[in-house]
Length: 79
Image 1 (cartoon, rainbow, N blue to C red):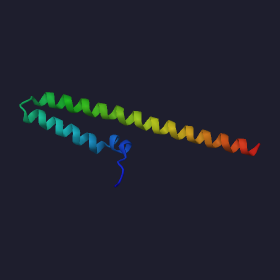
Image 2: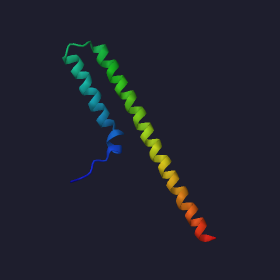
Image 3: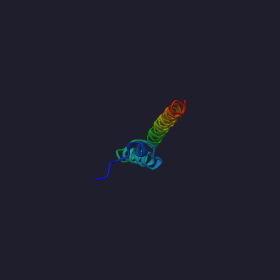
Image 4: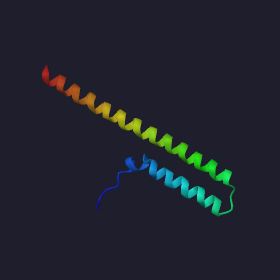
C-alpha cells in the first residue's frame, strides 16, 4: 500500500480549491446567501495560503539544516 504524502497534499492548490468549492456549494444548497459562501471560500483559500507557506518554509529550513550538517561533517573530516 502506498503511503500518503501529507505535506504534498496539504500544499496542493487543487485540494484547497476543491474544499472551498464544496463548502461554498453546501452553503448555497442549504439556503445560505451567496455572499456568505464567497466569504467562506475566501477564508478557506487564505488559510490554505498560510498552511502552504508554513509547510514550505519548514521544508526549506529543514533542508538548510541538513546542508549545514553535511558541510560541518565534511569540514571535520578534512581537518
